[in-house]
Image 1: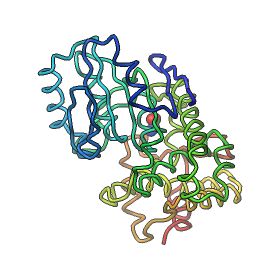
Image 2: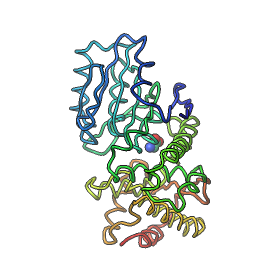
Image 3: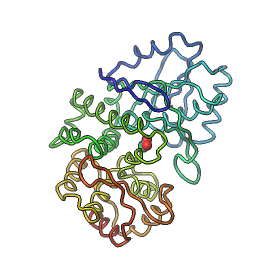
Image 4: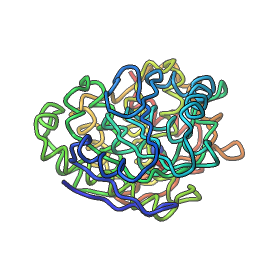
Length: 343
Ligand code: GLY
């Protein structure tokens, strides 16, 4: 088992490689009431009162949140009680937001069941539901009191979910931890999924990257933006695909694009650009998107809530582990970079 301490709003530990059921006992003891919230898909059975909600992004709605509030009221959940979220990244976003809003903020514990949930969503205290105007527009920063990562959950995932989660792991490698990239060199998704020790090491390293970043800049005034590496085009592609692409799949394409733009704009070495393609393809993730839709993607990127005053601002790297921002790329340069990754 490995532990990563996080200091962001509060101090808590991410415990990696635990058996979640036995680890849960320590959290339940001494609490008056504890309620588990899980998705209908996982329907994880515990002895605790359990609220079941729809799986995935469709659960991150005002209706589902209202349903949770009703159930918390019925169960008489109070300030000193604990809510436990057991599910993927969408579920922990929703449960964290329910905890942030119930009684002006009560404790919650995250038990992520997907790789993306383990290395990204459950860590760092961003909680949210979706609005008709976009994903995660209604939210709060509200850190969990702990995160329990049980690698056994990974065995039950579809390969596509494993791949999508690995995109976030690769992202952490490029922005801050070269060793992640070395561990993934010449490895297939199957190699990673058949090697629990490697999984534990990769998840430990990715969680450590995220913990380090949110510990410096919890509310994303500058440094935390680096976690959005690959996410500006990701946002547009995800939307353009009608959310048929997983978040991680769109991040993978977004990273290939920003690597190309960084090569053009700030001299990122061709071998690092090629390493993006190699590792992303190794994890069975896409490296390209439709050529003819560039103008639509450009419009969607300009609407990105992170775009500032008509410019498109990208988190980029000029070398492995060296993050910067590209703020003055011309549309022609962006188009050229896109042409290099499009089909
Ligand atoms: N997923 C990006 C962040 O937590 O800031």
